Image (cartoon, rainbow, N blue to C red; front, side, top):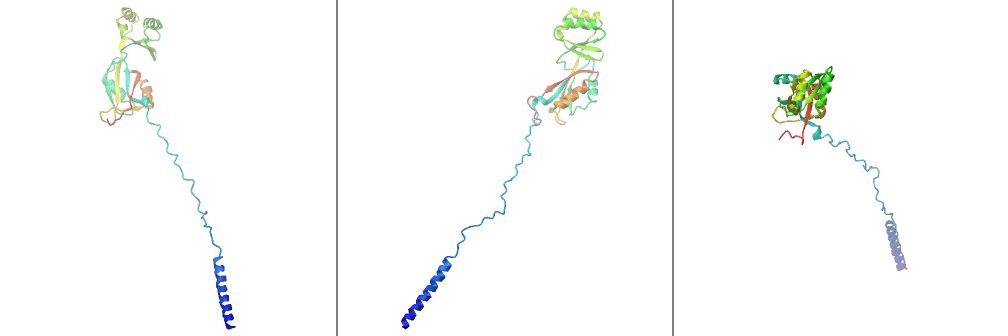
Length: 217
């Protein structure tokens, strides 16, 4: 009888261990790994669109390296320098006096002498151009015209003198050194407009830079 009790006791103990084992092994396993969604993902990384491409690289056609200035007959070199000093030329420049590399001759005809103007213009059929300055027509005369006797006789008849332009070249300089440089076309147009208001200057023409200047070479 005692043996039976012992066996029952052993069985009870074993069952107790089995129950405890089952309870522990059936505990729920957390298979869900939480993701911290409270930290926002920065999808708004800024792109710097404020960097503007440099489209202001000067076009060679907008770079004026110098000017040819057409002065009236008899303007001396010292007078040329004095006249130019009265204007804001933007940069230092070098002057070449009396180049006479373009149109050389002209006549000044009073507007009242309309007959003379018509007669001369009819004779000068080789596209001579005319500038109006005050009460005068400034008529450019091709060099070959001065060899025509009839043309010279017409000038004598109307008491008109054949005159010669004084052409001067200026070249803009880099800093204070000998290297040439340029100014923007907008500045050149301003200077041209101001110079052509001077009674001693007829026209101003531009020398453009091809290719763009490298002042360090």
